[in-house]
Image: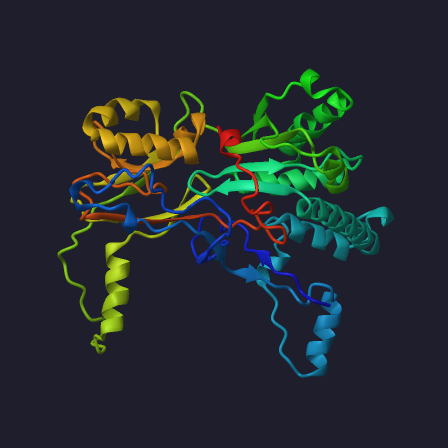
Length: 425
């Protein structure tokens, strides 16, 4: 029996442990260096060519439990047969410590009714496990046949063409959970949140089935689990026979983006203290200070730790500015300070990048690096290839999108066959 690895509980946001530690490129994603309309972005000896294209994280540490299907008694007897010492965790006998310990005590002392005996509970668990795996499999099959038209990792905006409504609510819920997880800042998405999405994205579609395209309301928008989903007209013509054969919605696509932070709600902010970058790194434990050792020490000294910002972007900063900085969301108030401070060509390029990567209100979900002291001043948009600050020689960053899994379909299913830039707006 092949063991399946699971993520370690309570480790979300710990770099190198939870789905992170290695970077992978996602083919077809829109994270290439933006060149604009032949507009130079070389203010203050800074060039867009220094921008590192985004990738997404993968890896991490998983727990494998290959002996989970064996009973404790069998494992213990096996140890005795091979003269292996058996070690028992003393906390297992503390019934007040965990619910699991309390249940184990009740099962051992036979104080549960027969309907809740160990064999009955195990049978119930196996039945529920089979049902859950079946639902995941159905959602996985729907996911394979979903058309991911575009995914922009600079902002996390996703354009997707869904299958036509099916009489399989549980499979559709699993499909939507997979899709919304790509954009949502939340670690886990509840069934109630996805049921809201199911109502808008499939049940509403079922009610409009059979109407002409002119009778259908193309603009439909709702928000759930930190994501705004907006229905748009299909940005390209689709033959009716092609729609039937593919099983995809012939009339609409959905554009998903991070929901802007509600008014009076404090957005997530990560403080980045300044470092004294002139302090040279020193040998440790009188070991030979090789070039490679110096490189590793300098890298860890000049850079902050990787932080998961807003549940979407892994970011680390090399702050050698001499002042504390912060990573936060771009806000409407930032525009009033940026407009007079930026050269016209740089401001034009910034507007063009935002229109392409984060249209509309999605721009107010972009991360920015700003000064921590009041009045705060935006110094950079780490996911956009543009630097304008005179601090560019003492400020650098790396950013990656959170772990996403587009296998086996990929996000470039149409391989550039259709232009959907208008649908992202």
